[in-house]
Picture (spheres, rainbow, N blue to C red):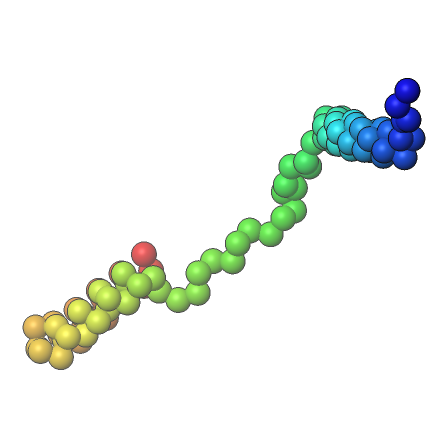
Length: 94
């Protein structure tokens, strides 16, 4: 008759139990997270008291480019000072 090895059998059993516990524990944890996500209240919508983004300070890059072109035309004598001022006012107020 062969002698059985109780230490080896215990080691195999422990490995099986630990492995099963790890799998079951992971499944339970993911199930708990899914349930918590379903029970969480929806995100609150933004209130109307929230501040609007600050308006841009100064002219836009396109306006700056137009002003540079107008200044060149004035420097070349193509535009008078009055025409330059009128066009400048239009660009800056637009």
